Image (cartoon, rainbow, N blue to C red; front, top):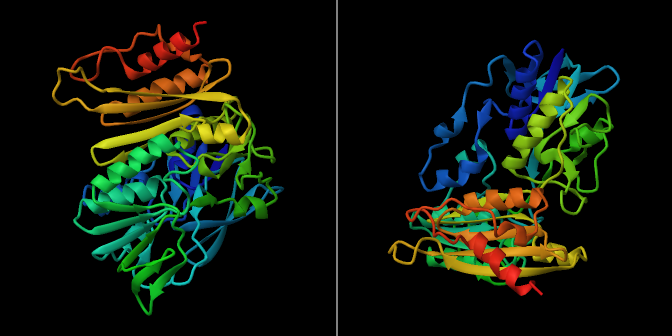
Length: 434
């Protein structure tokens, strides 16, 4: 049996390796457009501060038994003949498959403004884009996404003057609610980043290279990094007659199988079901791409794995702090007409006698029946661990008051005995006791 995987990001790597794990006799071949087999895009912002070098982000050895054809771009899928046509070094080739996994990921989107072609304008997307960056002393980062925030934070460590511009009213719109977003903006400001919201990019100014930007006023900068968004890289699927959904992602069922039998999709290119709302969604997260890749890879060699739906947990670093979220935000719930309430807990992350203690903020979105629908956390310690706990709680359909009797590991060097999650549950229980 031959499994062909298009794309070797997180979803493609996982699908290929799990296909080989579950059927060691399967022939697994990957078509990857980059000239290198594996890299880690989530670490690219840290390259800008010198924490990592680009060379450290490469992994040159694919999974044992998996053949990776690098520098190759898939151009067409012939569903009837079960053939993928791809181009490498100007030569067109064909490869037959028994099962096919689409893992082409996302492609960046840029605002249609004048000046995008000036020297000094770049993005942080892949190894090549970071290599091509020409960063001066005054940098405008356009886009208040997770990438924009991390790029700004990392550049601030280098002593440069950094501006962060977001067209919406808050950073991370649609991903976190205003109370958490305001904490993020405040921390960035403390790090020396000048944060401007409600500031859409109108034009990049300059003759041959960047001299400034227009965001309703002129700001003089000598370089611009644009990280304004991305969309599923689904053009190949659409052109090949594979159904693409309303989000722009390739439609899949719970087995990660597309509208064409024997063709699967996983990761950022796939349109899946939101676990809470049941609505179609795309995730754009390595964590969900990993899980989807496991399901697609196993099923590509005859398995019957099921992907229940996306909760999309994420975490972002911000100097010594982190923030993240999972599930629905309050703004999403309101837009969808889902009746809910919100709760906010601010607590110490270590015992009060510990001089290193700091505050952690937990924001929860709770449904009418008391079920946890979403949560966001900002703090210095244990953000990831708490998000993992809350992700599991949402997936299991737990009510907030159910959480109060679950013991949470304690050590005074790591956390306080009464964890903020337990405190939130206790407060909710007392409010709704009657």
